[in-house]
Amino acid sequence: MSSPQLDELARRYGIARVLDGFAGRQAVSDETTVRILASLGIAADSDAAIAASLVQAEGLEPPTLRAAAGKRCYLPEWLENGKAWGISLQLYELRSRRNWGIGDFADLAEFCRIAARAGADFVGINPLHALFVSDANRCSPFSPSNRLFLNPLYIAVDHVPGYEPSQSDNDAAEKLRNCELVDYAGVANLKIGALRRVWQCWRQDAEQRPSPFSAEDFREFRKHSGEALWRHALFEAISAAMVARNGSSGWKGWPEQFRSVDSPSVQAFAEASEDEILFHAWLQWIARTQLAQGAATARRAGLRIGLYLDFAVGETPDGSASWSDPSLSVPGMSIGAPPDMFTAEGQDWGLAPTSPLAMTRTDFSLCRQMNDTLMRHAGALRVDHAMSLWQLFFVPEGGRPDQGAYVRYPVERLLALLAEQSQQHRTIVIGEDLGHVPPGFREVMRETTILSYRILYFEKQDEDFIAAGAYPRLALACLSTHDLPTLNGWWRGDDIDLRLEHGFIDEAAAATQRSARTSERDAIIRSMLDTGALPEYDFPVVQAAASNPAAPLPAALVVAAHRFVAKTPCVLAGVRLADLTGERRPTNLPGTTDSYPNWRLKSSVALEDLPDSALFRAITEAVATERPRAQ
Image (cartoon, rainbow, N blue to C red):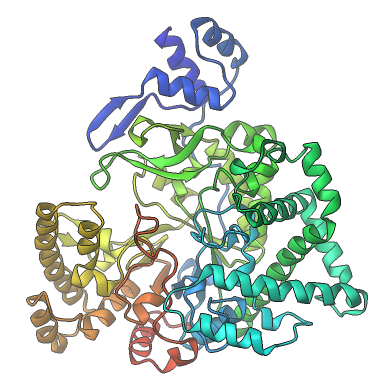
């Protein structure tokens, strides 16, 4: 095989032949390169095949990391020289005295009212993408089945017109509310069962119902959503049938004759299951309508930005999206990350990458649909792993992450599209630029007015945390994310204990990290003092706690840390609900599946009690003082 020709073919299709990692520059093997090319539909398994593929690639310009000239994402005039803040949360974690064991769209609307009264300008939530209705324990919001649609478990059933309360529903809901963790299977069983009853009643008099829940509204929704909605609803109907027979919720575990949307067996199923398919389409309509109502409530309550939605980086390889149109994803590959100082073997996220060639071939129609679907209800949009606009790390199926390679995407076109739709919908765009950020990428983000994502834990220079004034203006500043410890957990070193408990580090590494954490606690206190975020009169209490590993985190430091974030010049500042309620356990422990309750933890404070919580009031008052609405 001719390596120079293979190098040139890889270059044409944006496959990096060299990996710049924490261990230095390493060559990507010919085997990996050939496998990635094959997954993109490019033959390269012999010199003759490479030569023929090079002929086909004549005139193909390899992707270049550059901004789209003259294209800028939306930033409201009042933020050009002003600042705002908001609260982020996991929607499912909201605990209220009326929900059915999981936070829902009605809880979201009420939380927006609470946040607005506290002086916030946005409420950020986890991705709401469709998961697997028939297998609710597949609950990671970052492993969706289809990003075009929503998770029906967030529907507030008691707010759906036509729902008639029953004692059995009330008893089951109370039991689910009292669970320490979200019982996804229990919630799905209760909610989907109740919604089926509403669906049957709704169908009987839908023509007489008023907007926005009329039959005409539903027909319009189906028409606007097109073939994609029908295929997703069909997928959910087949998935439910398979699970009922003790089969798989994902299509890769289905009998062969059901693995293609166009197969005779699938068509026969569709003809025999019209009501079930319409039911799943109806669920999407109800969810979309309630989300729209939540967004409207947020604006009416006074949140100047409104809802801040989250866009996951990929979809599961056995979900609705890849089944509905297999040509849009890359078979035999998953998204991950190369080895780094935290994960020596790299990471495989188990998500199917979207094909960069399919993007171009279809004139980015799917990207347009996804952006439009999310931005329609979002005053701000967070793009998970924003570097995916430029490159994704492909891990060959059955291989190790350290055998992967970066594949480049048509970043200029993607940025132009993102900016155009951002302006159209008046949606601020935040890019989650954490992890391996390639040289020049943040400069491209700035040119496109995509806000950077800056986390206090990571903003350090040598042993010290950088000053608040050193943060960039075009950014969102916060303490941590769903993959990192809460401030309470960080202070106590719970994250270190969890890494040791789950075998990610050994005792020696844990001891080293605990020692480093002691130094970090001292450093964060110095930073709070130097910035004026921590008053001198609170210093003795905080310093005493820092010297005692068993001492709880002082409330004064919690408030100071949030005041520090608010003092940065960043356009936006974010506060986590988990920090407002003093939680210790992290939302998600990356690298674990069943050994830690990822995506299941509920807030320890009920929604109704939140405004009167002393910690909530202290933090929000401090942030609102630093970032008042009248700017």
